[in-house]
Structures are given as C-alpha cells and as structure tokens.
Amino acid sequence: MDTNTIYRGIRYLGIGLIFVSLAWAFYKGDGSESHPGGPAFSRAVGLYTDQKFEEALREYQISISENPDFIHAKRGRARTLMQLGRDREALLAFNEVLERDPGSAVSFANRGILHDRMGHYPEAILDYDRAIKMDPKLGEGLDWFTRLLQNRKDKPQTLADRLQTLRRPVVGAN
Image 1 (cartoon, one colour):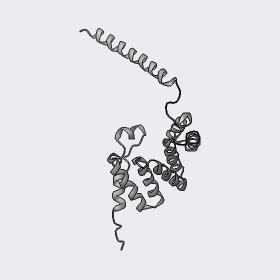
Image 2 (image 1 turned 45 degrees about the vertical axis):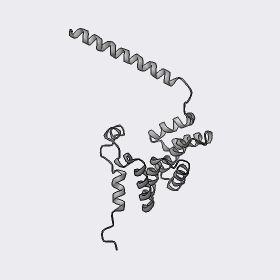
Image 3 (image 1 turned 180 degrees about the vertical axis):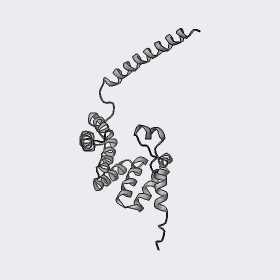
Image 4 (image 1 turned 60 degrees about the horizontal axis):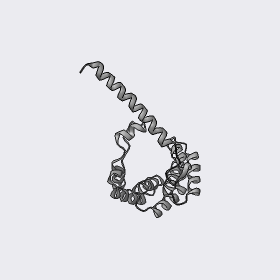
C-alpha cells in the first residue's frame, strides 16, 4: 500500500470523526436537563469547578429550593460551604446529606476532612475509617490523571495516610 493512500485514509477518518463529534455535541446540547437538579444544579457544578464558590452556593440553593429531594445539590452545597470556610454550616449540611444518604462514602470522607480541619480528630478518624471501609479507593487519593487535570504538581496526602497520622500516638504525651 502506498503512503498517499494511507495518509488519505487517515485524513478521511479524521474529518469523519470531527463531523461525528459535532453531531454528538449538537445532539447532547439540544434538549432539556436530564437530571432532577435542573439548570441551577448544572450552573452550580460549573461555578464550583471554576472555584466561584459564592455563586455556586447560590445556584445550589436554587436547585435545592426547586428540587428539595435532589441529594446531589445538597451534597454540593455542603462541599461549597466547606470551601467557603463556613465550617459549622457545612457540618450541618453534611449531617443532613448523610442522614438522607448514609451510603455515601464520599460524603463521609468530606465530613471527615471538615472534622479534621475543625480539630475534631476523633470524629475525623471515625468518618475517614468509615469512608475507606465503604470505598477503599477513597484511601488511595487522586490518581495521576486527575492531578494533571487539576494542575496539582505534588501528590497530596491520602485519606489513608491522614487516618494513620491521626491514629499515631503523640510522642511525649502521657
């Protein structure tokens, strides 16, 4: 097979993939919201990702008021309150989420982080331990691809590492 035929085939394949991608984007972008959180939830997720936490919180609140049973909006509100440093409100929000969704390992992990940050170490240990038992992958931390996407150069401490640190006895304490 000659190289011109190969390159022509690759070019047609590339052009075809572009058209398929555009068609898919138009198909997915043309329609109503497919989740019960509504458009406010979609906006909130985008704002949270862009670290616009005040705006994200407003959109999560709108989503919750329009869809009171949508747990993902409540979980987003709790995480956003934590990012804003509104720890007491965040703790109440995480408690509400876990009361309604006690199988959410991620919510236990996030509440553990909040307890840890607030100095509530025994509670943090319980939440970290429970989260890792429910979903062992949570203890491993972020993979290299996620760190790349989030532009994190250093590997952060994992939940399992932090749990081990919190369980370690303090040297010189008696």
